[in-house]
Amino acid sequence: MASRDAAPLLGGIEAGGTKFVLAVGLSPREIVSRTVIPTTTPEHTLAEVTRWFADHGPLLSLGIASFGPVELDRASPRWGHITDTPKPGWALTDIAGQLGRALACPVGFDTDVNGAALAEATYGAGGSSLAYITVGTGIGVGIVTGRQTVHGAGHPEMGHIFPRRDRDDFDFPGHCPFHGDCMEGLASGPAILARWGATLSDLPPGHPAHTYVAGYLAQLCHTAFATVAVETIVLGGGVMQTPGLLDAVRERTFALGAEYLPGRSRQQIVAPKLGQDSGISGALQLAARAFEGAND
Image 1 (cartoon, rainbow, N blue to C red):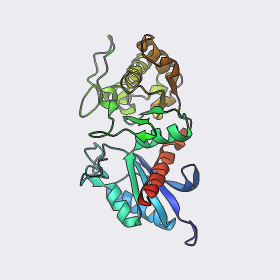
Image 2: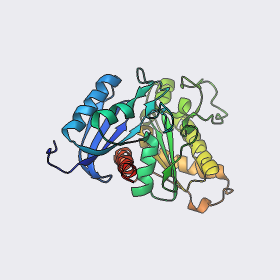
Image 3: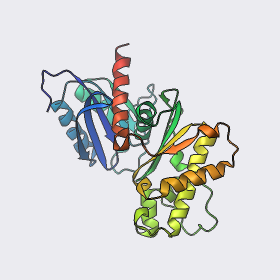
Image 4: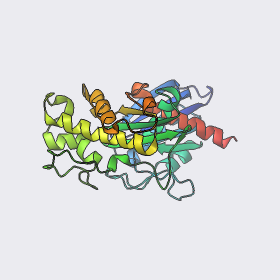
């Protein structure tokens, strides 16, 4: 617990559907204290978050890198809300507003994968343009170009594009409650478990799941290279811990490019350079930017 006489710190939250990672730090890469709490109901979870930060306060600012979908338009009355999430009980939760009021500090808010992409671009894999793809409970994509995360009408949801099905893979309707056989419905952790009754890591190397999942993720990476022209793709998340998967995705992605894409010599696919800290470092970076913005 921080002393009440200590210098104010940045606060960061990597808000996931399973757990919230909380941290305070002197900077995005100088973490003083951290903890993890389970994601339960919004009321209980946000109360726990508020108590923990209050014990480490006061805060200069708070950064939240959240699961989504979320509202990122500052002009919208729903800015800072989690919107149409399938996470039970969390739809329309005003996470940024509640915590900003409770902790009386400026708040920076973005998606969890945009936060991770920001941290990797700044402190990890680097490059002027980067996509962070997490493959786990869902499939999310965050994009950074010119030191800014990509927003538009909403935020990137490339985990819900529809890949071309493998010619031998037509007996599974997909697991996404919204789209069936979109990328997330075919290659996320829950989709793999629903289809084969095991995680990808637990399935033997010769199992067709390895071929299908690597192929679908390669299509996602090729799409990122071809549409957004990123230099670097960082592949993280639990599914990517499967031995050999990163190499298989990398090989198949560049095969799909067929030596056509401009700038292909600068393209790379790597594991997170910051390891498990990509998300929380990104949240603290959002906090630092929120503090700077409030004091401009």
